Amino acid sequence: MAVAGSEREKPLPEVPTFVELGYPDIQLTNWFGLFRPKNSPTAVLNSLTNDVVAALKDPSVVKALEEQGLTPKPIVGTKFAKFIQAELKMYAPIIQAANIKDE
Image (cartoon, rainbow, N blue to C red; front, top):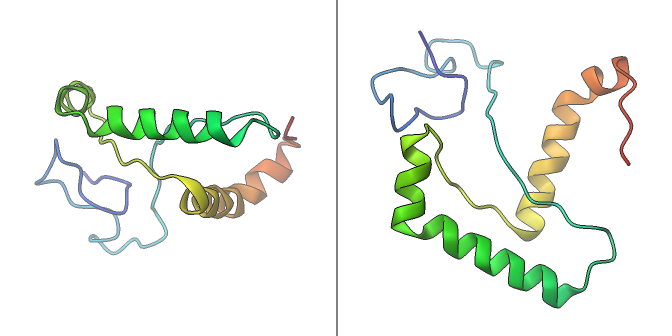
């Protein structure tokens, strides 16, 4: 048994990652992100970002998420954009083979 993320999961600390078991190419994680329309006002984006990050740091929210097997790790701004670009690059062959287009 192994977890596919880049690090061990909090609810399963005894379960190693695939990387630890010698399979460095198996690194997959589930994640959730909020996206906005392209020309959304900066003030709205900043307010939403601040509120979501604050919620994801609230101990009661963290506890509720962790009880569902989720680990909140807020990523915002250019760091999130770079994360998305890395995900798109990793999944590019699948996206192209399935002819998936953005909207």
